[in-house]
Amino acid sequence: MELKTRIHAEDGKQEIFITREFDLPVALLFKAYTEPELVEQWMNTKVLKLENQPHGSYQFETSNPHGDVVFRANGTIHEFVPEQKITRTFQMENTPFPVQIEFLEFDKLTDTTSKTTIHTVYKSVHFRDQMLKLPFAQGLNMAHNRLEELFKMR
Image 1 (cartoon, rainbow, N blue to C red):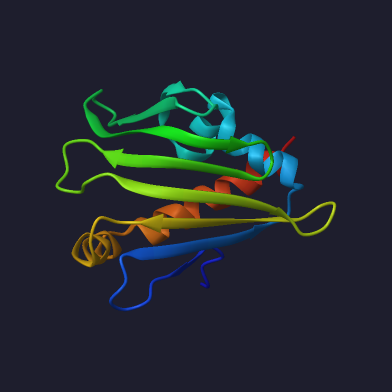
Image 2: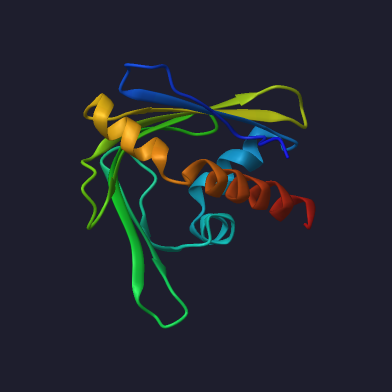
């Protein structure tokens, strides 16, 4: 099955580009990234904090069925332009990966379709390549599929 969320990583560079087109108006796509209750549903994680403003911060946490925390990520929001872009840092806690920077852009394609582009810059090519070895592409596709389904059910 073809993955709708595409990841482009050029050899020798410390960045990746993630793109996805959605059958959603850009306002709803942006809302899915900025409203805690929606983020929790499609990302399948708990939002501990989400301050959508410059110098705001966020923290996400995922637990297993036994209640053990298996994933925690946090960062600072540097730029926040409603329905257009978010620039933020992203750091996974308790991993060897250092902080990365993410540039999220939201584009209106038509009145009912939109696109997100996420440009992620890693500290080094090595860390970028290590990240690409993880199954995050499949996980991100599943999450983006849930995001689109979330609004189809409303």
